[in-house]
Length: 468
Image (cartoon, rainbow, N blue to C red):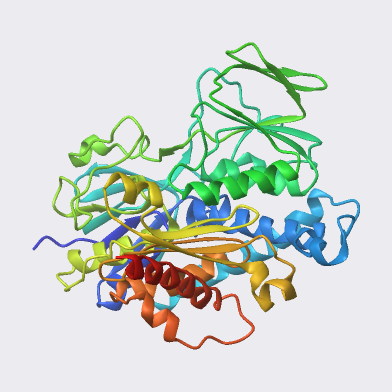
């Protein structure tokens, strides 16, 4: 065997790269991680998941939005919310999380290099540090976990202040009075709900006829209702023709002829894989037009000893799945047995209120001609819902009338992304709705919604059985 500097070299220290490095180190391998200066933890920690979700918590706390059902629509913890108020919490959390990542890598004796890497050959990368000095590192296995960056249309002149992408929006100088968000995907809708909660007049422009088409239609309609209640305007089926920057703001011109004035414009037009600086061709690899790398079921690329994990390989592009991909890739590279990732993967969308689901939607089941019954629990029916002041949340169970298993679980409201894991566990173990009917849940809790929804579904099934 050739004498390499490391057994495994990981390019990128985000959720996927970090877990790959630690998994290989736990198996006794010599491991190194390379990432850009001041980006330990990756995009997820610095401009993506962690800061955006922390910002959401700051918005909810400072605006008092979640308490207005109890204390009135004028309730607000702080009248004049500044960017400094919002970023103080974000900077604190990011700083703590960077320390956690650094500590975990050090504790597992993973060598960390600061700089940018590009391939010299299939087993070697050239590392350039902040001063421009270059060194070469070789490894028996290489894991590409470089993540993505926001896609930017060539026709738009981004300045990071008035015309922004989802990375820039975290460093706005002030809370805008008005804002146009181009794109009604997950990221676009999360920021739309945050800025609307802060009092910004938000207009969402989307070329498709609707938003969040991966979600249950009833859940999406509920979110749309709540956002309209926060003065969000939706322009579906519209395409942006141009964005003009003026001294006193921006003007978004749509192909239909509409013009929308606003303080700022944020583009949320998908993500682009961070692969253009890797010199993939020198490793015998190539990326698709979106910068994504193709992998097999073990996250191995066309070059047998090179793996790729996380957002850089495309869907589902979630931090949670990236972590599991990193671990699985490292195990496979080290010859360690590893189980297949379960196909039941929960989706969490941190809008205000939250959305989370696992399994199939009503539309998918109908299209596949799979019969189902629906059981619904509404937070207003639960004592815990009244205590926390959430009278709008809901949990929906989709149940098979033949074997009474769960086909899908959909949740909207406070704690949805936490609550969904109960349904995921029942589905993953092949449990039936009867388990939820007979189970005892702590009272008062939101988890009790599972029992209420299960009873609703079984009562409906009983009515059908009586007629049959």
